Image (cartoon, rainbow, N blue to C red; front, side, top):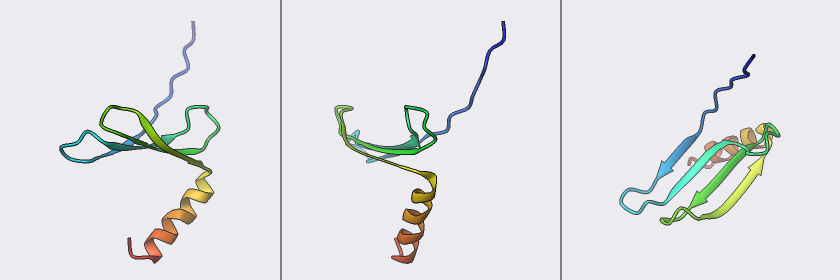
Length: 68
């Protein structure tokens, strides 16, 4: 029986002491998109933005240009 395996890399940015965090990784639907979600201290998703990798590169460029 053959198995297909895949490595998924996600990043989490935590707010020290509160339990809030931002999750950055591939979308859960497998559409090859980037998914950014904000979670509160109870683990509830309070915000979500999903974009293509091309859009994410432009967001990164805009943040760099703003000096952020």
